[in-house]
Image (cartoon, rainbow, N blue to C red; front, side):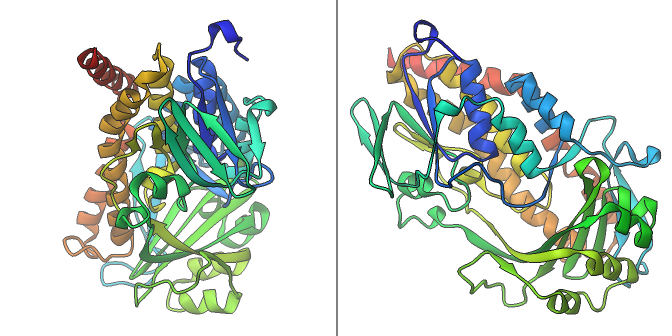
Length: 428
């Protein structure tokens, strides 16, 4: 906790208590910036099971607060086979194709000695919650509007309550209300778009997975490629559970249901993969209580801030999960934004801090959204340049994540601080 005489002369309202909002809160706490989290749900909760963190995400955790990285490490799972420790994913053919048969191993993507881990989302969220004082969080606060005032903002909630702050940061996910307020309700970029793909998600107890699939396939990150679909698996919960995501392309490229997560009958899921190989069919047969998830992302926004209103994480740049980097980018956002806000000596420079964040993070995060869609097409052999040319596929997949993983985060922070310094100097 910070004391009043050491706190910065501003206070930040954080809308949303997921990974993005909690990481920003922890960063602001270290920077001695007063904040309050407003979460629409009645408690902290993460939707989904497994989440992957690449090398950049793990470095961002450590720079934001080493305790975040320590908490992640307590929950982390890596590939369990010794010869797969430095492998991101092993790619195999999930169905009979022109270049390979179902079950045939194709190639592995090396981490190049970098660190990567997977965790259960809820377990990681619990680790973050431990680092945020309870009195700095209010639940049941669904934001419906943000009104800018001369010296700050007023948040209006569905329950009728209001709250004032120097600034607001929307961390309210892919159905972000803050984004709609910031960009304008009629702005096309304010609304998420269906990407044409959906995914069956579920979990398998590891003992059952190993019994049916064998140790190597069950305990290491594996991607099964196919025409208009792909299936990925990786261990979570320190090797006790196998996380499964089975993606398909929707022929008509439209999602009609107002719900984005829908319970599904096993028969429907199995019919979707009836032409696939035995390994994939065995994986699907073991999935417990599968749901089908529509995969949406956001069109590129022309800005991440307006005045004293800013957005980050999925609210700013929701992407498909095909590169395993969305949550990591949210942690990068928290690192950059907390450092910028922590450097301020007066609340009148908040907009300059948001502008610096926008200039540094928007190009990088929007590149993620675009390339993640492209990765999904690669895995489903739909890319017009590559198709099912296995050599071309290996070249593309083996190199496409390096720009994400190898980012110099210290330099990124320095760049953002320099943009802020220049902006503030010009104003003076």
